[in-house]
Image (cartoon, rainbow, N blue to C red; front, side):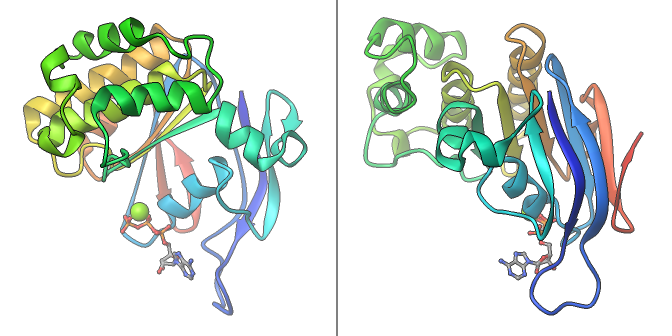
Length: 218
Ligand SMILES: Nc1ncnc2c1ncn2[C@@H]1O[C@H](COP(=O)(O)OP(=O)(O)OP(=O)(O)O)[C@@H](O)[C@H]1O
Ligand SMILES: [Mg+2]
């Protein structure tokens, strides 16, 4: 379980904090969706729980251990996987090599298992011939599926996504949502998605809205 305690954050000299004293818990086996107006601080919040940045006040615990204690590098490498709107794939290599690199960097138990990576890609409709092409030759939806599969295969318990369906059509968005649900419900991960899309938000097990500097659980 990921727990946020007494989180307060403001940027620079701004008079008003983005949020104050936030307390929230995220359990495994669940998809959480976070909505909120532009500039309300959603991406900033994700950067804290992903260990990419530190809030002005407050702490984040993974299964009771402060992530400061786990160490930022260890936490980012082994505990969380992040999916961005812009896929965040290594653009100079193939889909297959993106997955293989992630397995290797995170010291996964499947490190070096090419067939394992190919099978996973095939499961989301990416055949070997496409898997071996440079990722930039794949469509937006295919690239996003590669990014999600990559998050699925590394052994991270927490999967965080910022607008993962931002520029995808309805069909691809549906497939992506299904993948996230699968990550939570079949692979027992904690999935946290920020989205502007109300339809995606409704597919979360828990819907959170960031309004008036507070996170409100629906
Ligand atoms: N590094 C930074 N330094 C100063 N201010 C920042 C920084 N990053 C974000 N902000 C400000 O903090 C506020 C929240 O930004 P954030 O990106 O978290 O919003 P958001 O909810 O993700 O918005 P959007 O829906 O448009 O992606 C905005 O007013 C933004 O300008
Ligand atoms: Mg944002």
